[in-house]
Amino acid sequence: MTYQELYEQIIRKRSYLCVGLDTDPNLLPKHLLEYENPVLEFNRQIIEATAPYCVAYKPNTAFYEAAGAKGWATLQQSLQHIPREHFAIADAKRGDIGNTSKLYARAFFEQMNFDAITVAPYMGADSVQPFLEFEGKWVILLALTSNSGSQDFQVLKYEEERLYERVLKTAKLWGDKEQLMFVVGATQTQELEKVREIAPKNFLLVPGVGTQGGSLEEVSKYGMNSHCGLLVNASRSIIYASDGEDFAEAAAREAKKLQEKMDHYLDKYLPPQT
View 1 (tube, rainbow, N blue to C red):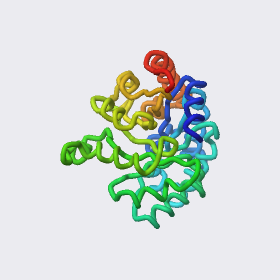
View 2: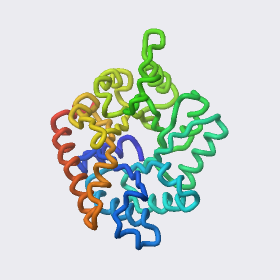
View 3: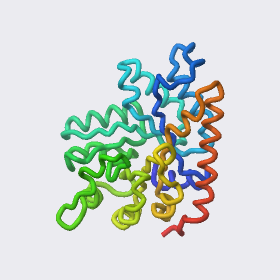
């Protein structure tokens, strides 16, 4: 999916919502346990219910890897239920020496056909570059995350700039807006203006709206660019909106609420294309 195609889908659906498929077997509605693969059935119904209101899905691979070979199979099967018009992100947070990164990239881009993968930049350019060699695929680089531990390193001063600022500036030399996004947590809205100053055209993947308390309006106000440039992720607040037999309907209602707010913020904050 190209930059322009993603933007056009956002405008068409009036949504920049990404639904996180962080499916915990311990939190599934009890009636699903009668299925041969309860996680897959849960994901199938969540995807079917929320697809009209979102433009992307983001399975966190840890929830699947923990189940071993069956979990990997479930991840692959879940991906097949995601409509191809939706942007599919493997939240895998990979990043290793070059030959290893190339194999990670092949696993998620060739074997599973994800559109994008989250990558940790700590090991530098040669650990990220192999992911950027796949045409039509995206790297979503961790920049400024929403967890409390982000304060340990990401905002420390490096000469006259903070570490996350150096990450953004350096990574922009590795790829362009057509293949490189950045993760910026929704609880870091005070930094969004700085992020946009450094990376005005890149898409940002923004987790932390919903259960983690991030403000969708502030993210939209300070993070939106002329092509929207945002994928705002919500996971638990949508997929666990109910633990009863109505879980899919409840998820759809929560997704629709966010989509309706996004529709409003697109009108309010989307600047003209440049």
